[in-house]
Image 1 (cartoon, rainbow, N blue to C red):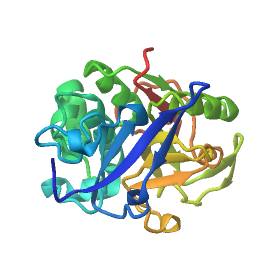
Image 2: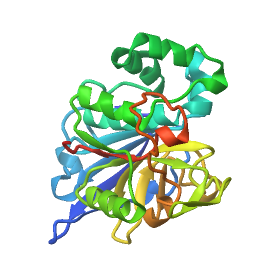
Image 3: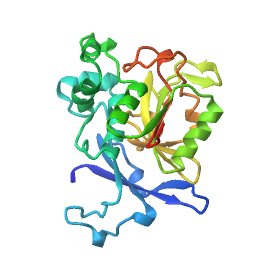
Length: 278
């Protein structure tokens, strides 16, 4: 265990109707750190501290770990500028891959670029993206992430296009089953199909990938975020919001595309239901 990494503990509890809600202790209140270890345990499965196995003194052996990285604060060597400008997708992808893969427990966001992407994408495509000037280098898309997750044995369903009301219901139901969702938001705010604010930036500087972890009993989504937002105060790597608000910043894919790297707003977007078969 990384003893120098801050830990936040959350719990999943399923009620009589079968809905699974997420809750948290006081460690959630201050998550403005470069790297956060998020442990999510089902309440009925939570191991008492006195019964913890050797080497797991915090009693978290039954918890799923989501590692959340701040894309601008880490030492990424030669990828530091890329991660600062374009690293949200790599950070979010790392959060999910580490949580659901038995063989990827030690990867970091820069490993996504250096090791994971060139393993699954055509080398020419990978080289073309990362040999361009920095501003033109693009992050992996949700479509690309979905492909790699499946290749890694992690079931998921990528929803390219959606209507807002149906998407809110779909995402909420998935979260209430105790499973996460990856989403992409824009700096633009919509009302239905009409853009009403082009530079709102509540959830994204331009476009931004995040991981929704669960729904509280109060109806808010708790999500992992690699970026800082002034409105969130000391809650940075973990934030809360209303999905009915966030959906106004999400966007459906408007053109048929299976692009692995971001090539324009019309050819990316949507969301990924993690741990779900197609």
